[in-house]
Length: 360
Image (cartoon, rainbow, N blue to C red; front, side, top):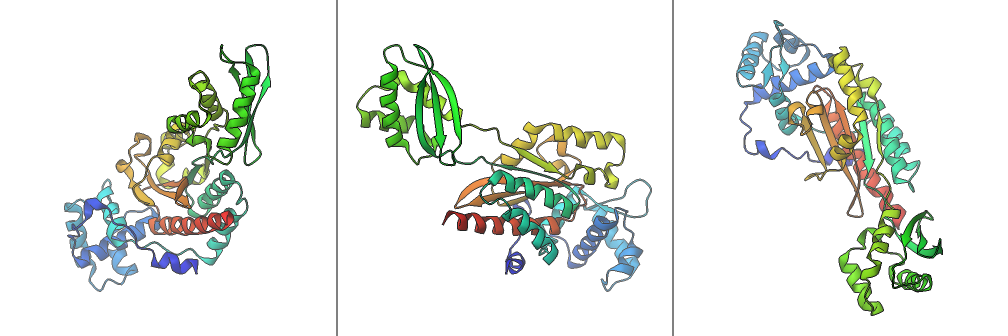
């Protein structure tokens, strides 16, 4: 059933190419064949290879002419003095937007992905860690993933006396996690008054997401308790700070990526390893806003200079209408886009179904 969902999924074309489908049918077939062949061999593709391996119904001489036209128009490049061509960034972009159809996952892939998704349904971070591991293995690429951070639903707060002017704030969330912070007791208040405030906050905040404790909430609470809360503002900030957890970025498959021909030299290999150390860049890339569920950025299209030699297929995952995390597959520009995108579609659908079921 899920495989059928993937087959029915319609790939969203890049807006920049909307209405710009200017290639003839034959040129499109030639470009498609070159992308297919180069993706699997990493070797420049010649017209004889296309004529022999792909049934395009035309001679190698005709294919050679079409390849020359595609090169003149910027869709192909001729590396060094090789007689063969390789797709350019423009060629790959045209392929992704116009020629590619996401591939359905195989039964073997489905089994591995479902196992990764269902092993830790209650722990979103673990789901993303498992997905990164399995996807890197199946695509032979580097995969990175991060959750958006789980909601901090308040169970209750409590104050413990520390000394005459300070107290320990305990914050217990719905999952049973306990966080703490040391806070200053306001000069015109006392520990007993802090306890009364905690009782009222527990009544008012129980079951709410602490991330939503904003100025509007504080004004509403102030109206409810009929007193000035300005001396206690730092306590609300401390509550949120206490439950903050650093977003985890999970990665897997670096060794498989640097085995690709494009990254065989030491300098390229070092660039990949350095990239993995820049967790802030990876997190920024993963958790930045997306205007579509799946996006493909090819080579120099990537916003980050570190990714200029890579293609990035990024997917955003949602459950019950909320973004819960993101995953990206990083590989050479000749990556098998249809396979990676099809896998992302599958995981989006499956994870959404699992988490919605888990919330019932």
